[in-house]
Structures are given as C-alpha cells and as structure tokens.
Image (cartoon, rainbow, N blue to C red; front, side, top):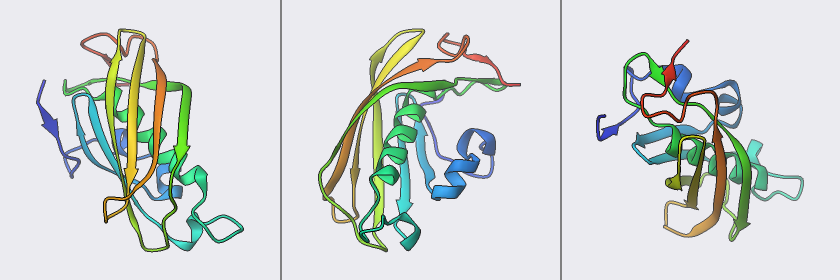
Length: 151
C-alpha cells in the first residue's frame, strides 16, 4: 500500500465525491491509510433558521471523514466501503459564513468487519468547532486486507 494519496485528477471521482458531497459542497482534501481530511467553506446555505451554522453540516463532515479514514485502499481495481453504526458528536463552537472548516479523522481501531474512528473539526484559526467518535461496519468483504473488487 502507498503511504499517502492526495486527491487529484488521477483519483477515481466515485471514491472522492457523491451527490450528497456535492450538495453540502465538502471536499476530500487528504486521504491516506487510517486518516482522512475533509474541508468545507461555510456559505449561507449551511446556516439554520437562526442564522448560525447547522449542526447537520458538522455531522456530515465528521461522518464522511471518519468513514474515509477507515476505507483507504491503494490497490488498483479494489475498494473498501462502510456504513455508520453510531456517531457520537459534540458541538463546541460555531463558524461564520466564509469560514473554512477542516475535519481530520483517524481510524482508531477495529478489525475486518467493524472499525472505530475519531475526528475533529477546526476553523482556519485552529478553533475546535466539533468532534466525534464513530463505529462503522464494512460492507461485504471490504474489511479484508485486499478489500473487494470495485464494480
């Protein structure tokens, strides 16, 4: 396995983006074994009816980054997929329109069927905005060392 992969034109866009990622407009900015980074720039569409950052945006990037952290695989034609079993979140601060939030997640343990991950969201000044711990289940044979065939 390669030690690190930075998303670029050579990364399969189906692994890096989805319809929901486009809707929320978050981006996978770093992806390597047991670690992932997701970023979003807060716009007016990310605010709740009170005019502050919607917690769902934070949950989304925490969940996405944690999932990516456990699913990195650098074997051509193979992939890992997982779904969330639980996500425990803490909202610590808010962020204003224009703020760039970075969520860094790390796989903290697990095996071939379930993995654990933790993540933090910080703004560009380094202020902790939110954090989460999650439990994720690999789909099919995704948890095997060689993953599963990418279909």
